[in-house]
Length: 293
DNA sequence: GGTAGACCTGGACGC
DNA sequence: GCGTCCAGGTCTACC
Image (cartoon, rainbow, N blue to C red; front, side):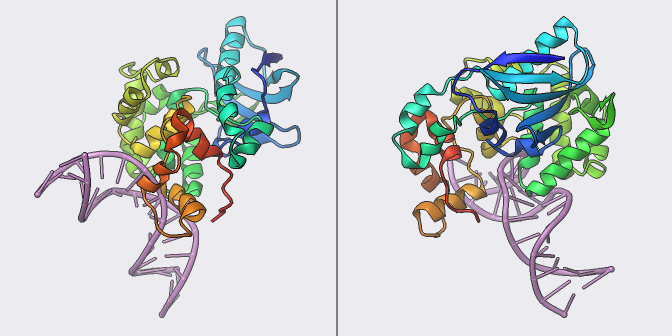
């Protein structure tokens, strides 16, 4: 079956897909032939579906691998709206970005939306998996989590959904450490899964919270395994752009852009984006860096 | 609040 | 093939 979902204009599915590396982490997949994406998702009913998303006039078309009940259809629509930021308004950002040549592409490509997972739990776990490691290892760890704990897609059991907090909470640190190869991150992921599964931690509520960004950042920093970089990354995914996810790559970019390759620290990175105010994180993310490493 | 060392994996490199 | 070094953020202990 197919759902048609409107998007606040301007909207570009290609820009969302290319917004960062999430598209290369399972259970996302690119659908290069048709310029879309697919995502294996376990609905709250327990059903596992393949959601194929394509650009359509005024928004996106979502093809599902099986027929959905009315409740499942509504849940799917809500998830896709969140994942693609269909209702996000970037007109204020475009108004300031158009004045900066390094951001000219943002307006012409309708960029700004960042690809999100269906649940904040999945995004927090994936963010933890990006820390202190190389991208190839992040992909491997994420793939291991899904292959070992994710529910299979009935029509193609090789493809699986991201594991639920309940499923991961029923695992143990040794398995996550040694078999899933999460290393020292294993207790962080297990602890997070247990907190979410027991409802001691309601991550989904953070999607709608009106907490000031500083308070939200403090909240995220209380999660074991989430430090300054991970918190800033998650704030970006939550639509809060007044913090910059500063990692070692940020130092290289800023060093090359403004310091002729000389070593820089967090202070220099922040200094170059401070005047962008509430948009500084997005400006950093969308900046037209010529440095490729 | 700031700093040092440990954590863990895998790629690069030298032998 | 083996051993060593290094990169990559966060945690804890300590000052």
